[in-house]
Amino acid sequence: MNNHHWPIYGHDWAVEHLRKSIAHSRIRHAYLIVGSESIGKETLARALAMTLNCTHDDENARPCGQCSSCKRIASGNHPDIIYSELDASTGALKIEEIRSVTGKIALKPYEARYRIAILRDFDHARPQAQDALLKTLEEPPPQALMILLAPSTESVLPTIASRSQIIHLRPVPTEIVHNVLLNEKQVPQDHAGLLARLSGGRMGWVMQALAEPSMLEQRAEALNLLENLIPMNRAKRFEIAEDLSKDKLALYPLLELWQSYWRDVLLLCQGVGDSPANIDRQAALQQIASQTTPDEALTAIQATRNLLSNLSTNLNLRLAIEVMFLDYPGLPNKG
Image 1 (spheres, rainbow, N blue to C red):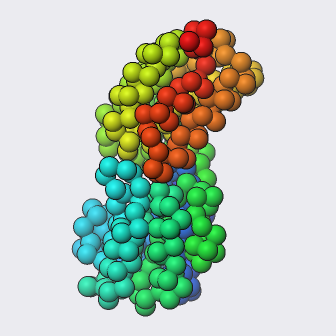
Image 2: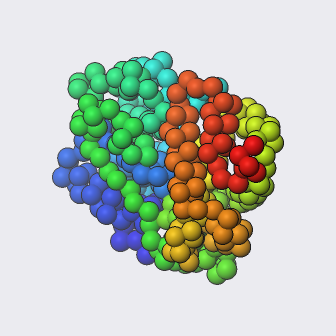
Image 3: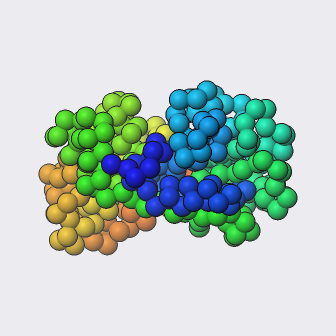
């Protein structure tokens, strides 16, 4: 299906661009890969790392996927590939972590051609933490490469973005996702159709859902929670807010999902929601849309987006969730 052999589906233009850069020895010291949650940013970053460090004799055959280097990069165990980690309690990408990564990348590679740092969730780094990267970007060590991953350039300082080559990953067309599932992954027709629709063109999400079937159960629970919440009064909503505030990191995927749900509601309110992203929830979506105005749905989307974009800041989480819930429609007499 692909016209290349990188372990990437649906982002052929990005692969082609990177392959040409490698072939002409025009690899940059920093890349900023942007795109929505689970669209495949980290998979592309890892594929680039595999290609640059593959030991196959034929350059055109890289990444071979079979050599020791390729296998260890694929499994996340290569000593020359450094991943940033978020702070477990706050979900922030801290300045200490960025300094630790830049310190490691300044060392010579142990064994590979390139020492590569992949900074996941770079949008979780505050401006001060992002600044800690500048010196490394301005004076990159030889044989070092930095790959930053973020949902958009908005969350990245212009001084960082301007020193990186930006690669925008767009949602993959549903038909391509469907074909990959059917032909490459041998997923049964019905399940492939459902996954393709639910994916919203996010190939990373699809691959994760195949590897971890429990993801679909978690998604169902998260949507049940939202649907049950809508008719609740303020006191009950606040009980749920207290519960959700106990696990900050779990809120990122939950709020992404809720945002897509409210978007479906808004489209139905406007009479254009014949193919919602959450296709398996059509009946509930129609019922909620029939009791919701477009303005209310839009307010719910904005409230969800606001909390999502502020999660990495030092906020009172329980209070922030309560504020979002007050902006959700369905409150009986707003009381």
